[in-house]
Image (cartoon, rainbow, N blue to C red; front, side, top):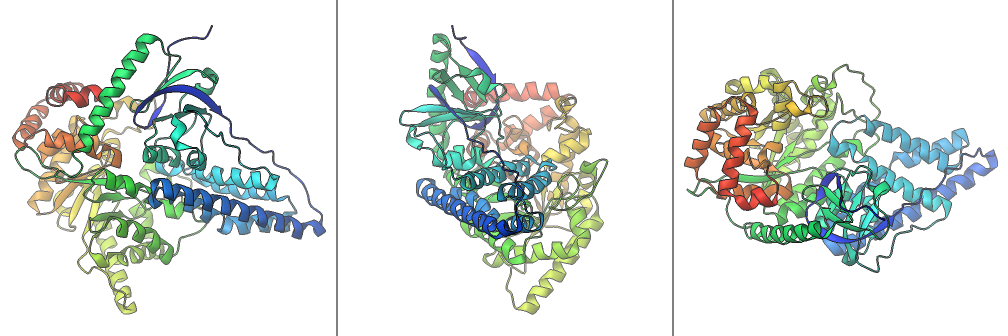
Length: 586
């Protein structure tokens, strides 16, 4: 007899609740033929490899075309990275190995992709580490073509929930959406392209579910709760009734929040907050627009540096940034200069650091790699002719760093003037405040820049000396810690004294318990993931500035995180019971 009511927990990848029959999807893996070639076979093997590359490129182009028709060009652009891999030096390196080492195409391609994957695996940033699955996706597809096997995806002739060890982005793109109720996987993260795809298609999904494929069987009844990251296997009648009611409440909330899309982000008494989105990939633009963002408050630029085997050229960067800038125009875009180095190494770079979180990264490596920094700044400046772009420097810890970065920016401007290239001469320049020294130096830094953006994730980590990725101490990480709140108040106060604006772009900007505190502290802008924009807008529109300031006054009398969180939970339950109950704000 099958066990009933098994609750499994994973990572919430795409919100929504669905119930259906499980269908296993097993992605075929093809063995690598480790074969040594005779000299006379090399030319034929290279030709076989090139033909497989071309077949794979055509397949990916076809998937992209189909996906563009279904959900728009923005969400199909993630496949550009796969197409780029099929045109990049990784292909030339493979052919070179076939020639030099006389290895089969499969073995040679495996060697070159493993080298690239090792670089990605060293990266701590989850947004970038999850690009690993994109590399494996195109590798798997190419190996299938080398083996002469077509892709084998389920037809989905009936409405089902897919259960898989992992799903690649192109797997998701190829499935028939009308019969795909939802999916759950053993592997994956919230920021993977597979998860982004699920959100774009509005398919409930949970990823990173431990023991999923060893627990669920074909034909089992499964509940997917993509809000809370829960999978229920063979639910009993009581659980089914509970989730049916939850589904109705959730759909009512979504409808209620969607009605806010075009309404202003103002408090009850008319105080306006700018509500922006954090993005890293062009395919997120559609979600930015559909959730009513007033701009992009953080455009991360690391991805283009990591998909290239070597530094991306000025034109390559320009096209990457311009795509986003033009897509969001006339709304503003804040482009953060590259935050690599330390724990996030450039491709091909080998640097050993005992504590990379306190090491050579972000603005520190940019100031040392001046030519590369200048190339990026030129590419960014070339996108500014419409005057909707701002530049932001990450991980500032000293005034000297800001002055040096501004000097380099001025030299780049001069170079562009000599070239006759137009750009926004009055472009705003800001810094991320994510190190305690920057917060303490806020009175001085505010005289050097046009705006501050508080990176609450790192500011919390560095203030509390807690590695939030370390399970032994992660429970100590909390952006509502009194020390963090005091630093944030200091930064906001000093910014306003110097007539510059200040935003918050970390996870704190969408935490229902933190948003009222930030509003009461006087923050001018909040930048969140696109999916959290409407919830955050609902919170802002529910309170007055007077109430927010009263909340801050009370919170600053409290001395522990536990006290602060309990106080804010009571406030949210009282003012926004629909959020508290339906989105699990606790």
